[in-house]
Image 1 (cartoon, rainbow, N blue to C red):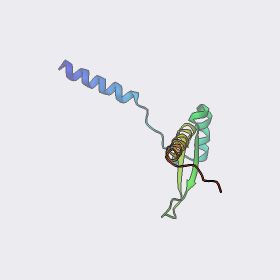
Image 2 (image 1 turned 60 degrees about the horizontal axis):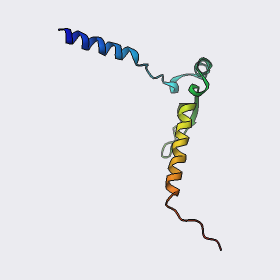
Image 3 (image 1 turned 90 degrees about the vertical axis):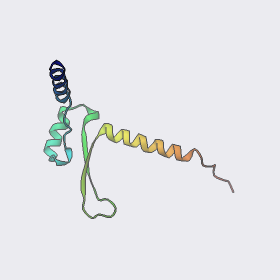
Image 4 (image 1 turned 60 degrees about the vertical axis):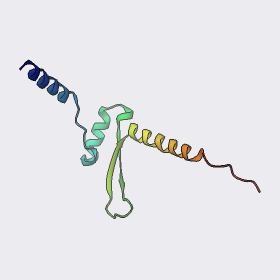
Length: 92
């Protein structure tokens, strides 16, 4: 019985500690501006409308500046990894 009570207490504490992720795509521009005013620079959200290949329906895509920076860093890392095995340009 004590183990069950301890397990329930730990599970409740763990669930309370996790912050639910806010769906920025569903927020209005005014709500995003209010959110951005309440957080530091790297946690501010920026949204863009994207039309993906194969679809004519524009979708709103929102990310924090930190997520944007990390995504760009990953892309640069992939480009560097791809260029490691290539040979230099030949001169004419």
